[in-house]
Length: 162
Image 1 (cartoon, one colour):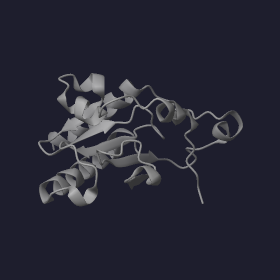
Image 2 (cartoon, rainbow, N blue to C red; image 1 turned 90 degrees about the vertical axis):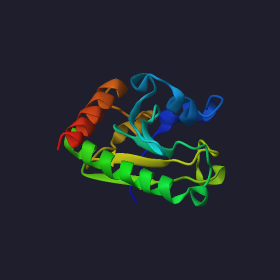
Image 3 (cartoon, one colour; image 1 turned 135 degrees about the vertical axis):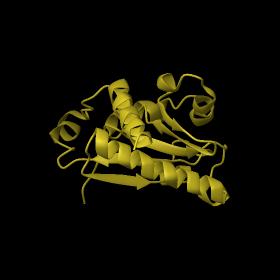
Image 4 (cartoon, rainbow, N blue to C red; image 1 turned 120 degrees about the vertical axis):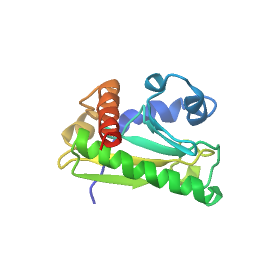
């Protein structure tokens, strides 16, 4: 089994903040500041500030709801539409070789935000894990978050122009 190590995420685990960053992020007028890469009426895509890998994104409903089974059909469709769009944008902008896509529902399942369900999309490349996490408890994120943000926005812009 391949492992994707992310020990730097312990900062978030120890200090997750207060309130719902999905809701406050969506209410923000400055998408770049809160790392929202795409907005819809029912769902949106936001970068993970504590990524497992470069380009780690989360797709969430606008409505504050904690379980997949509580989503309505419009929210499910909007989330899946955004997942598809951002995969195409990442394929263009970052050329990953694969993706991990999933949901952690409930604290026991690993959800860091229990009451606002969200889907993780993690781009993967052959060899994207190396000795650093094992020996130094460090994961190398080789690109600044805003630089990755700009690449993803460029990919989405390209999709809009097709």
